[in-house]
Image (cartoon, rainbow over all chains, first blue to last red; front, side, top):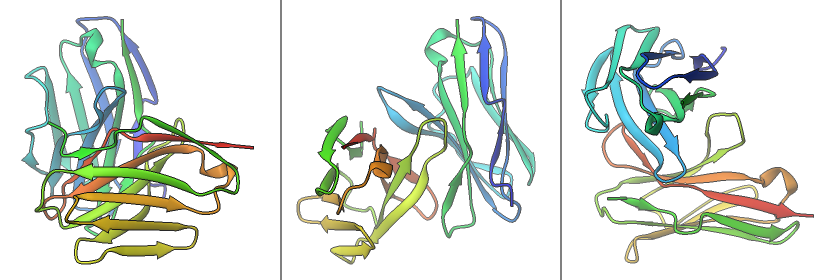
Amino acid sequence: DAGVIQSPRHEVTEMGQEVTLRCKPISGHDYLFWYRQTMMRGLELLIYFNNNVPIDDSGMPEDRFSAKMPNASFSTLKIQPSEPRDSAVYFCASSNRVGYTFGSGTRLTVV
Amino acid sequence: DQQVKQNSPSLSVQEGRISILNCDYTNSMFDYFLWYKKYPAEGPTFLISISSIKDKNEDGRFTVFLNKSAKHLSLHIVPSQPGDSAVYFCAANVEDDKIIFGKGTRLHILP
């Protein structure tokens, strides 16, 4: 198994632009999580899905953030419009209740 | 408000000595605690966990201690090795599948 796959690995964008981060979970995992890592706040849970349905999005910072999971093998996290304070590493993780597996993350820089 | 707190951003330990990483939590309803390890440019990986009904769990060089009355847990690594240099995240399970992470502690193992 290739593990949780995130793309792109790095993204540099200008303030105001739309950014889309992508995640492919491990096949058979029915939970998918989006986390954001910053120095100030550590690893924050943004949203998670169970069987493609959003369960808890209370961690999504603002309406500028949205996430979708159209099928069991793909999820997106979108920021529109992006702002410099959104710069962080965004991790996707999947789980089958036995344990979490994280992807390698997307480092987002908004200039 | 941080429910899982790691108050030491960094820690330096001599190779061969014991490393002790600390974590405090506020929610007495947490039923499972975990430690994750993270290398640069990689996602966090699971290291060790402990159920709230136990006070100690050991796995090789890694031992986690839980003091429920103090709402405190610690990770002991002995002996410390150069490959242990990483960021360590304390985490707690609050519902069936949602995990809350602390800010992390960067461990430096000195030669």
